[in-house]
Length: 225
Image (cartoon, rainbow, N blue to C red; front, top):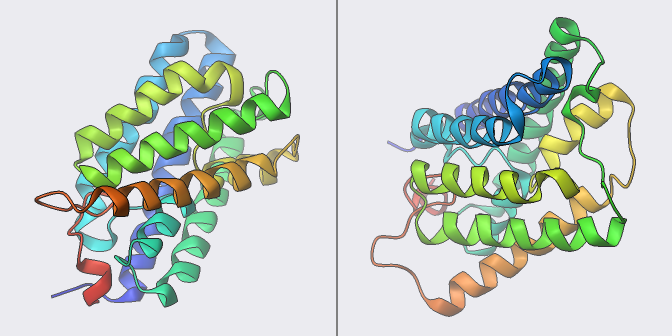
């Protein structure tokens, strides 16, 4: 039986909380201790996504990303009426996780906030392309290890330049709690455009033999819920 919207929204909030707690949390730990290294932080992001997809995917699809929710809706795999509740739950989970990081680790490291290391245009292009490849892989494969692996790959390559957010909720929570809003707009616009591009390419290529939802659940769960 398909889960209710209420249960799915709670799962989205829990999953996004976990992503922001562990991912940006690792960035804060690295800033404070230097113990993880850049690749260590990237690996934490990837493993966090993998674990959330495997755990909560059967409930909500575990999008844990407004861009993923947008891509899924554009592909007709999620009811349009579910988009706003999903995004609201994702943003709430991200903010609560950032508050938990503030309480436990303090402000040093900026709560893992994403800001461009170079120009805003450079980070915009990087975020757009990273989001595109992440969501295309998610739409075409959707398995936890694939999506988590792409997240780790993108974080390792793009993290030093743009933060490799690919996720408006992941950027919004730390930005709101830390009060750091530098070029924050690009962490919404670029992922949204990347999501639209990924959805368009996915539909043009045609559905894979065993289509998967972007977050690792059944591809027709949203459409049939």
